[in-house]
Image (cartoon, rainbow, N blue to C red):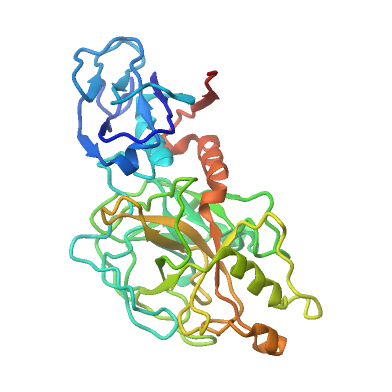
Length: 409
């Protein structure tokens, strides 16, 4: 078994390994040292590893690996710094990749998530509403949900089996409809079949239990398990999750991509587009949303619940926004490491119109009011995401063992 423990401290240097360890099946019957990657202080702050029995064959500053144990193979790594750990987690070594990624914001399989394809560009001035296409490979985590060949929502790759999207993309449809949905990864130009494009069906779906269509500003998040595993490549990669305590400040420029309409009631593009959206101060976000009248209850303002799970992004003057068809796609922001990685801070959820100005809502009639883009705040729902992935077996075949327990101090 693999034993890993958390600490709240930051370290100057740490390492991890990704490997497979199974007794049966096509994977290697022994644990081998596949890769060791030195991480920065930013990524090291959330985990440390401690040695557990059976003892590894070799000990040196950084990594310990044990091989050829009879039943369950063990990958053990050694962490610089004091072992002041708060939580303990055990898992078969074959789950190491997903687990480290969930808790550090990286994918341990090659340490690659949230990284655009080489040569691509995340264009900070491009618009979804208004129309300018993204660079091929700049959003390798983005997926297209399609029904009978038509795109209706987006999503983001979390692992080889799991997709993050918005609850309203799934909850409003019947089981018969969802059984016909194709999940496309590696998509860019929907008119062209690219060799890295892959299509999947939905094996299972989880919509947040507190989501309700009458309160579209809360808990608008869902997970989809695919019927087969995604083959990762240069233009197909997972997105990083943020850390729960990531403090990404208002005014930070983030990027949203999708195949949504290019303007309100406008046409749908075939080629992926992206837009720069600056994060809005949370207090201003709440105030503006209170000024927006609900389309389903025109005589009453929408009243977000006290425990709002949303964040807002977009300029007061409008002109840059998500639009119909962008729902479910991620709002990605630069990771604090400064290494060119991106994290999925939000899931595209809702908005009043597309690209409308909203700075003077109170002086406008309800029908003309606008809002910034409204996104589900992924940081607030990380426990739900992790819980659902554990319940689903983490996409690791028949092995669904994942135990997390608090360690007494």
